[in-house]
Image (cartoon, rainbow, N blue to C red):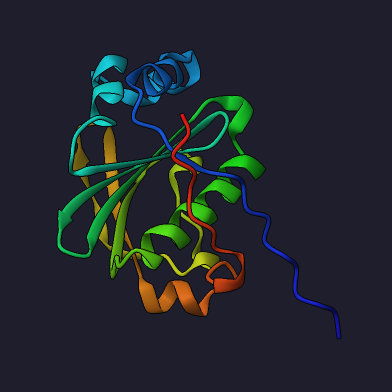
Length: 166
């Protein structure tokens, strides 16, 4: 029998400085995925009271409060942060929001953009069919707190709060 693989967690922080997010959104590889949304609009979201902006070194996640305990997650990473950094930061960010009382996290997969698909292994489940959206055809995914806790990523021993440094 082999030991379970340890999930690496990136260090995350609350980052409300719009310049950080605008810089990430201005990367040509990221900007192409934003459609008509100007990068400055993405940066401005980080300062809104209903948004929790959790950042790693080369990107991060904007959690938008939809209602009490329900958050919509948007990910934004420069190409250098794709892969291990994004996965580790995602595990840390989701662990944090569930630890803070979230019951449900939603996100969207954009058809034809494989990096937008959330990991089944973390407990995400698709909901419904593809439908037209502002950046292409979208599919809704949800992650409940109980599905997160049952996943290999949802172990409480590796959850740590983000720093408030920017």
